[in-house]
Image (cartoon, rainbow, N blue to C red; front, side, top):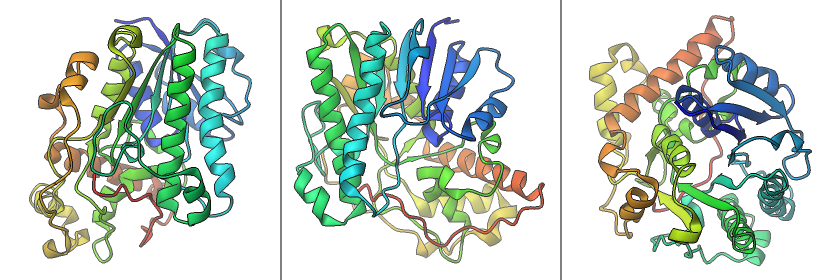
Length: 356
């Protein structure tokens, strides 16, 4: 059992909370970073783990990270996923500044190992998916386009570029970027404590799968690509003990399941395996049928040889669907037990991950 002490930024979010849960389950000590009322929510969510401590940082771009001293590594998940239309330039700058501030604070604290959550959106639309491959969007396009999806892509691209540049200037630090596609699957155990009131935004990208329960108006994703949250968490944790960049080169990994999502199969699965939910499901033919993916596949060989993550053990679509929906219903029930009205929104603003 590991006794390493890990900092997780964005620990109250969908991705950060699952990584935190898996770290604690694997025997790590964890300091989870959140802000405001989410700090107490975090404490409640992981109260049964003595190795967990919640830490408040109000601004990831300028906060005091002196608590990093004595820790072994940082997993940096904190980043806004939803792009509001207000100030695109500030959003783009914040994505870069936040990551650089965390890296600098880690360096100042003597931490050598940092893992960052990126996004497949930062790569070219149809590949290639090498560590030096980036989407062609420019800063000028992102600032002027008014397109939330392109702004999100630019945020991730330029944050990645800044992170790799920092790592290149500080070879004593070992930095890994894990860049998943659309993340779905179950919420972390204890997630209901992170959302004590009805808050579907907290579901983040898992809302795409959750919305299958809104049968009259489901919100299916725009493309076939997916990855289970549990595989995302495993990739981050494996990166903590991966060989250094000095021996394997820049570590920026695209991450997606080798199979396509299949929402018609999901409806059939839930109809057969969760009959009590049958009346909430959409008509079978309303679900999309994807064309065969024409894009390049990601480098599964590098995922295995460097991270030790084998595609053969990725979570199946069946398990992603059933375990995911079970966890969403459990959170719904926690709200209903408090007398709260649970009404799923018809539409939710999430970035479109394109043909990935």
